[in-house]
Structure formats: C-alpha cells, structure tokens
Image (cartoon, rainbow, N blue to C red):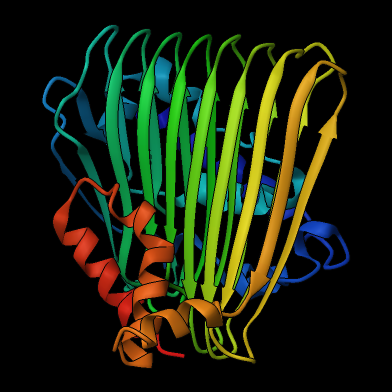
Length: 380
C-alpha cells in the first residue's frame, strides 16, 4: 500500500468521524460510562500520536512496526485499516484511530512455525499529545504457534487501542494484554480475534490502570473445532471506573470457549462487567462457560455483573455464573488462628485471588510490578 493510498484512507476516516454522531448515553453500551469521558470533541490529527513502541523477541517471526508492515505487507494490513470493522457504538473511536495512528506493531508467524521466545510489544504512553493511538495487527498462519505480550504503561490523557488478531487453521496463540496507565487517564481497548478450524487461543487480560477504562474483547470461533480460553483480572482503587466486556461468538460446530474474569475493588472503585456467549443456529455441539468473581475490599466499592447467553441451536452445553462479596471472614479467621496478622492475611487472600493469572506472564519484571500494585492495595 503506497503512502498516497494510506493518506486517502486517513482522509476517509476523518470524513466518517465528522458525519458520525456521538452514541447516545441511553444505549446499553454507553449507559453507565458516558462516551463524553474521552473528549473526542477536542480531537485533531495535530494533537494525536502513537505511543512509543518497543518490540522485543520473536526470532523466526516477522515483528515490525505497523508503518513498516504497511509498506511491506499490504495484503495483511490493508483490511485492518478501514472503518466499519466495529459496531456503530465504537465507530468514532475507530475513525480517530485510523485517521491518526502512528507507531503500532505487526506480528506475522509463517505456516508451521513455532516461536519459542515470547514477543513483547510495549507501548510507552508519554502524554505529549492529548490522544494516544496504539494499534496491533497479528497473523498466525496454519499450524503456527506464538506467545505475545501487549503492555500499556507510562503517561497518557486519552488512549484508544485497537488490536486485530487472525489465527489460521490449527494455529495456537497465548496472548497477554496489560493496562497500567495512570489514574488520571482514560483508556479504551478493542480487541478482535478470529479463529479458524482447530485454532486455539489462550488470552489473558490484566487491567489495573486509568481513571476510566472501557474494553471490548471479541472472540469469533469461525472454524470447526476452534477453542478459546479467556482469563482476566482487574484491580481498582480510589474512584477508578472500569467497564470491561467480553464476547464469545460461536459460528461453527464443535467449538469450545471458556471465560473466567476476576475483579477486586477497594475505596470507591467500580466495575461493570458484561459477558456475552452467542451460539449461532448452525453451530451445534458447542460448549461454552462464563464466570465472573468480584471481591469487594471496602464498603464503598461496587461491582455489577451481567452475563448473557444467546443460544440459537439445541445441541449445546452452556452455563454462566457470577459472585460478589467481601473477603471470606472464615478464611481470615483461619489465618489469624495460625498467627498471621489481619493485614498480612488479607494481602495473602487477595494475592491468591489474582495469582493464577499473574503467574502465567512470561516476563518476571511484569509479574513483580503487577504483584506490587495488588499488594499495595490489598489492605482491608
């Protein structure tokens, strides 16, 4: 794709932005967290930029900046750089991103290639521009395997992150997404993953930063035998507000999806989790599960959970559940009876709540940094 073509696409995205109205706050997507938090009325190409991106690891794979990929991999990148790939509720965000992104990351794993070394994509938001616009594009060809970490840290005002992942037949991907932005930032993340026949996804979300965080994780099981395993943890304090959504969309038969999302909140932090399992009419013999657990560490914290099932065929096995409540007093009593002080006991229980996800991270510095955040806020 030539630079001239890219410029045309950017101009078209700006036109889409101008003619698209803000979504109403009465629509379900924006009913609890108003769209106006992101301040798109202040947007211009001059006050937007991509955060600094650092790419590490992945010997045997193509790991490029998105600009490099635009020049070298037109057939892969071109379909991801157009508007209309998201619902109307997020069209303005998508238009802004396509119009003014820079930096970004591109990962391509060739057919049958198994990448042993984890690939690390670090977005260092520097706050130099009002809007930070990171983008990630990932393609795994047939039989390919890889582990990828996408981390967001540093400073930011408003951040709009888009990730597009495609797994071909029998490909396998472990993906980690972490968000550790400062508590005066607003962050939106839209991740779209498409799985082919017998493809496997192990996706882990770790969300701890930003004043307002909204995320959409869409997993499309398009090929027969595809499997997805989604894991997420969220820790909030002070008056942070989180609105994470997950979507498990079964479009083919004999597909399986599993989702576990854990939330811990203190002070006046709030989380609104919504999860959707949808199984299309012709997708029979599918299995899907969804679970959301919420741990409330103070009286002012609040967690809402809305698991949703849309099951069109009969031959399926699906279930969901959610819980919310304080740290178990019986567990605290058990630890106290063994001489463990209350503060230390609370920290142990909260850390145990998160550890099944944190221990999966492939980089020790990330594990320790995130554990420190949880430990600092685990007191009750």
